[in-house]
Amino acid sequence: MRVAVIGHIEWTTHGRAPFIPAPGQIVHLTDPLEEPAGGGAVSAVGLARMGAETSFYTALGSDGLSAPILEGMGVTVHGAPRDRPQTRAVTMTDPAGERTIVVTGPNLHPDASDPLPWEELADADGVYFTGLDPRTLELARAAPVLVVTARRFESLVESGVRADVLIGSRSDPGEQFDLTRLAVQPDHVVVTDGRRGGTGYTPVEPPGPVVDSYGAGDTFAAGVTFGLAARRPLEEALQFAAEQAAKVVTWRGAYPRRDGEPDW
Image (cartoon, rainbow, N blue to C red; front, side, top):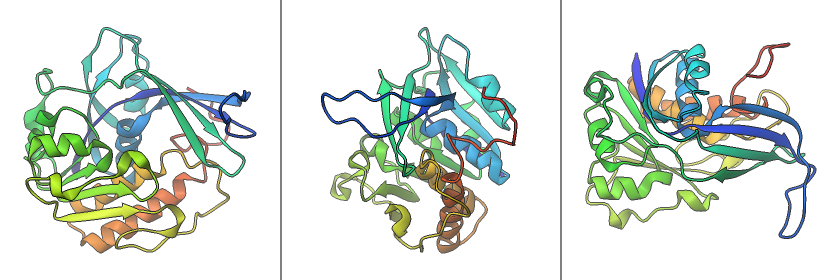
């Protein structure tokens, strides 16, 4: 099965925080972990981990840090070069495993004008869109399955295309939406609600202690894309996605590591 992701990478430093600072406070992060992450990278690696042949359409910073690592995790990276370093991010994980993210500067996204193999999207079984350029969303619609994050709702509005599934979050302010603004309604709308479950699926208990919630939402979206691309009914795809997301909170950072494996 072939799938594709359109989105961004953030070079991310994960740190443990004794508390999330309020205005005027200072917090010292401990045990730093650095890796390429962000919604596009996390979902692409998640799809590869689930067993899909995964292509990732993105933009790469001038520091050249990210692509070799992602390719080492089974992702084919189609990266448009940019003349500035990869966007940086810092995540603060509190003792309960909840994460807060600070991103420095705008994300690097691919544009339809970038010389990437956009024509291959028509041969994919499914595409997950967390990009920015509405024209790339139009190109993604050539695939039989198109899943879009509500974080890119403005791109969906501007593109005028139909999404098979629009995924938003009940609690994340950046994933709210107004369906009346869409020229064409999605076939399905899914709203996640953390450990309480969400639209069309029941919550899944993590298979171990909760360590870090980073990447759970991105992995859920990847799981929905994987399930629908595999021609599973929506209900099965959603439950599969919930199972995959539940695993993510049991490891630190964006990706699982084997015992003794060094940081990137």
